[in-house]
Image (cartoon, rainbow, N blue to C red; front, side, top):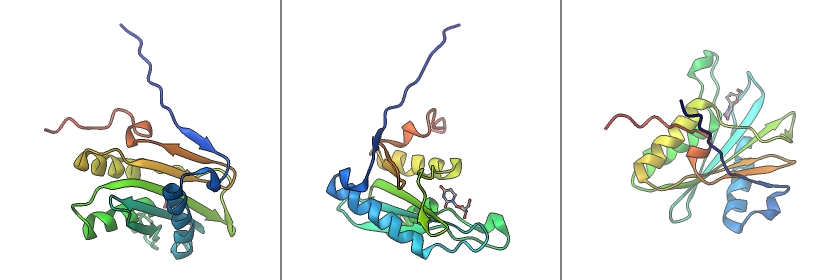
Length: 158
Ligand code: THU
């Protein structure tokens, strides 16, 4: 038996203004996208913004449904929109923000497992790392690739 260890590296920023201009713009777009959330059940407003190669930004927000499983997270709404409208363009980065009780959450919302799996798929499809930016009021976390949030990505099907 060999015991092994994996480690991930990510960066923590205290404020959106500490980000580079492209990532700052993306973070702002994610915050703005929370305004378009349809979340009458959870009242948890999530916004996601995807930057495509070439710089175009595509946004999504969580869309809920009275039949709960029929709703969709902000991240997948944004990525599926990008994948459907711009199928040949790589998704370079995704920023995620959440608002509760009218305030940007202090601790950033972390994407659910299903959203991480979808991020992994698009990263594999384009063979280019997708940066993930989790935007909170008190801190911003930046991961350079999906593998950092989803180690041991399923890739056995050849
Ligand atoms: N939600 C997202 O949109 N993204 C996340 O990363 C976590 C959760 C949504 C799903 C649901 O509409 C609400 O937030 C509460 O779970």
